Image 1: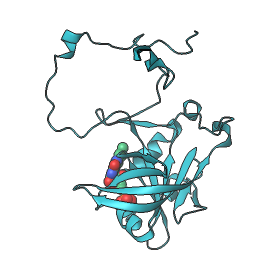
Image 2 (image 1 turned 30 degrees about the vertical axis):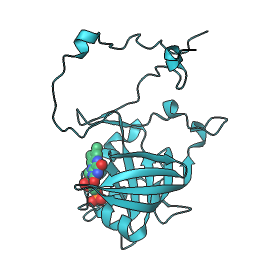
Image 3 (image 1 turned 180 degrees about the vertical axis):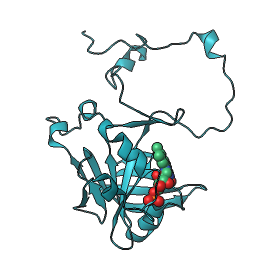
Length: 212
Ligand SMILES: Cc1cc2nc3c(=O)[nH]c(=O)nc-3n(C[C@H](O)[C@H](O)[C@H](O)COP(=O)(O)O)c2cc1C
């Protein structure tokens, strides 16, 4: 059998059993890795498009296709989500790291962020929220549930449609993330990361531990 990718363990750091017990308690750390950089688009009460960068979020269900985003009530985006019940999730490529950072540093209450960066808002086809034309992947979502968890409120959005750059979709309709060079967030370093190497085929390289 040929291996398209490095075998697991090759070039990666694997600890021996003894080394693996050398741990220290880090307390209650609410962090994971890797994190996406989700640029969430909404319309404010004046109908102005706004975007905010969120790292706490991800896929919530495969059917119905749903995403979760964790939003602090202080965000301008929070008000918009409550009012419109709609949002978009836009994935920036690495070329837009500075724009994504800016969207997470200032509030739409005081500045028109898209105008400031020259990026183009497009009205969602299926929901009342704007997506960013220049970003390669856009999900149109309708809020179906929200859950107050304390510092953040978790909004669940059902995906109504996805827009994807034609060049980044394969014959089966799947996104070619590697070529899209989607930006990631490193919550430990508080830094943006480019996507890394492919380490193996999913639902495949783990087979060696399944006894026949
Ligand atoms: C990398 C990064 C990740 C962020 N993740 C979140 C998040 O998950 N939830 C949140 O409420 N705010 C998050 N923020 C902060 C908001 O993006 C920021 O407060 C923004 O100004 C909100 O914009 P708005 O007031 O226009 O909604 C993040 C900011 C950055 C830079």
